[in-house]
Length: 133
Image 1 (tube, rainbow, N blue to C red):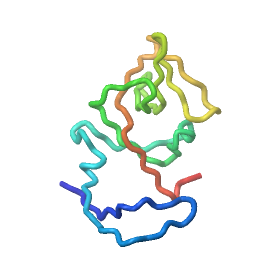
Image 2 (spheres, rainbow, N blue to C red):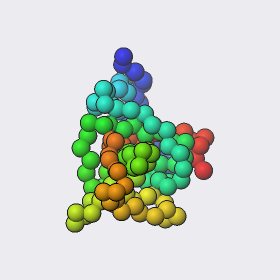
Image 3 (cartoon, rainbow, N blue to C red):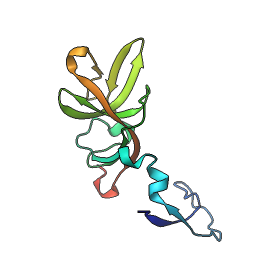
Image 4 (tube, rainbow, N blue to C red):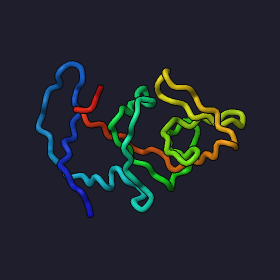
């Protein structure tokens, strides 16, 4: 079912105020804008602070597309030893690393013994401004 909201096609300045001209409101479908593969896309709640430098704070939510093929540099949700994790996937010289977005956490060098698989690729991040820490 389409979720339509009004779209105000103006760039909002985060610096100096911008002049507001007459802008035409148009409707945009959030499903069409955000979800490319509905049957394989899931909304996942994030806990913990390991991804804050990638702009994924605690209590944010991410859209995860399980049909997308992961590439080095993608933010992914993975399953390691039966538990979900979210990290940046880095593949270099045959080595797979899971990189946190917080220097307080260590990079994970994936080995076969870890039973790791990519569950899906993060396509969107949703942050509630009330939860920004």
